[in-house]
Length: 215
Ligand SMILES: O=c1nc[nH]c2c1ncn2[C@H]1C[C@H](O)[C@@H](COP(=O)(O)OP(=O)(O)OP(=O)(O)O)O1
Ligand SMILES: [Mg+2]
Image (cartoon, rainbow, N blue to C red; front, side, top):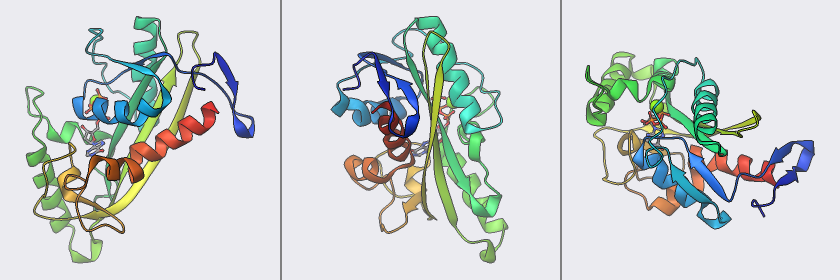
């Protein structure tokens, strides 16, 4: 259904179809894997930004949606194909929403190499410094933007609420997954089966909204 050229969305939102070939404007292999899994039931051929040698744009936006839009726009302009970007992160209540849009940057050293064990240690250290009454509540946010070569763009945001735990647990997933337990679960996002993560994650929530808008 998503392969059709144009589709009127339920609720009056007019969104063009994104298939059959869609550029996934990310350089994060964990995200690319999850996006492929989430889109696989829809018969869309996903091409990663790295496969097309697309550059990694600087994320200069102040919101998840701003950054998702700039990544999607650049990939659509350079490839001439519809492009989907994901900007996401962990928002910690005790840290007033940080690391938020800086979630990847908190893991980077001066050379740009990422170490999420260190980033998780920083998060936990700052949560402890905020004091017990600040609590351990956190949520992941995912902004998805689809940009078309004709200049149109659509964005959707998803969330999942949970609690931070220490020490980190599990080998699956990526990023901050080993320290995040979604509400109603006992295991971290890095311990649960990927299908369970896809049923409830911030990324899955945003994809539900995207797919609904595509009709
Ligand atoms: O499901 C998730 N489970 C754990 N951690 C997550 C998740 N989703 C986002 N995160 C964290 C790690 C990631 O690196 C950062 C997003 O930063 P963000 O700039 O959107 O992505 P990125 O730089 O890794 O790849 P790219 O910009 O090429 O899509 O937030
Ligand atoms: Mg990034």
